[in-house]
Image (tube, rainbow, N blue to C red; front, side):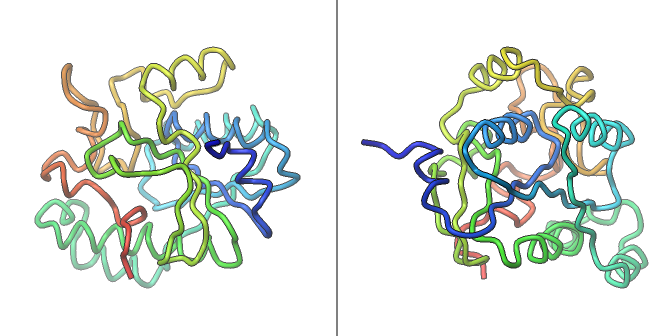
Length: 221
């Protein structure tokens, strides 16, 4: 019999954390976790200092809706100051190396802090999101962070996600109504055009196989 989310959660000893990056997937994953028998868990976000104003408003909406606090983890201010002196506002678009450096400082390094002492990390990742996520499974072991990674929405289609959100009247990011399909930092995210895939608006100047920020790359050390 295939394991269920509850089966997996029941076997986790220690603290569970859910990473919230303001996607529709994240609000569904949060709702699923709150419906489970997990007594307590941390919900956190990686505050890059590059959020859309709509993201800040949505952050508060989610906290009010679920009666929770989303803990913010920030990049090192010294590293950010040095990065901005080198790249300015748009330098992450000049090369893949620059963009990876920006993501490393603003997202990857804060994630390492967020996962200290955690036993499992719950995400909203789905196979259908992009070619870089096609081999995801419900339960993985993340060697980089030495913990279990749980992807409860891994096999959900776009239709499954929409149906779940509507059935449970969950709040969604206001930028979805403006054509955004994936939410990220303001300089690196745009609305998608008709016929484009859901992550086409993320780092749109790059090839599809490069469109990860470094948080979900298997085997990365």
